[in-house]
Length: 254
Image (cartoon, rainbow, N blue to C red; front, side):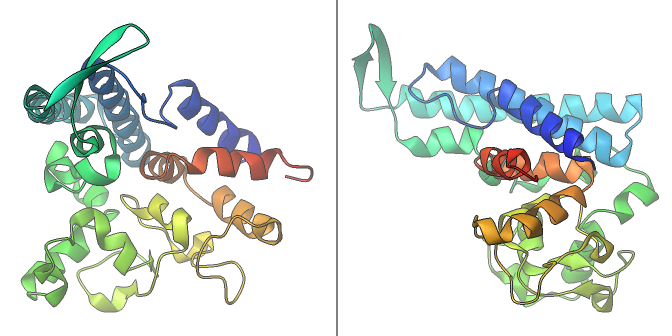
């Protein structure tokens, strides 16, 4: 990508209000936020896979059905709240923040494999090959101990394997292992980061992303090496990263 493309995607994300949750708001606002997140996720898949119109329609219908289930769980949590309060003249019901995060934090709802791209629509073999599915299937066939941990999901594979070292295949030898490069690693949660993109680390010894001036060049290089769909996924899973990346790219010399 170019600097202009990076800033355009970040601006789009911020203009949609996706870089923060609605704060103190009626339940309907959280549901609206989830719909916006769904559209962002769908746009990421459409761009990353080059989905056909038929695939987009399938994925859209799947996301809508899954969201209706999520809305039902959220409304139930709100209805079972312990009380209510008034804020700026509006009355709100009290609920724990957990149900809100379950609805609007993509790191939580995307853990359900029903949201995995291969379950949202019928992918071609070529499209499936650029996902984590080949590795997940291989792990299941070998009864990998990683799968014993219920916290492990299709989405968390990126934290266990930081990148593909070449085309993904059903062979563990085709995956490099190790920690993903901090926040930027979430860009590979759906579309795996390739070694030729400069991951992990453009500099030896930097394994995590700390937002320091000395690392601005490092971060800038890796973001520019991303596919737009990877940056979209990074922002979806790390919305606070939008302002940080924007700051680096708008700084003098950025």
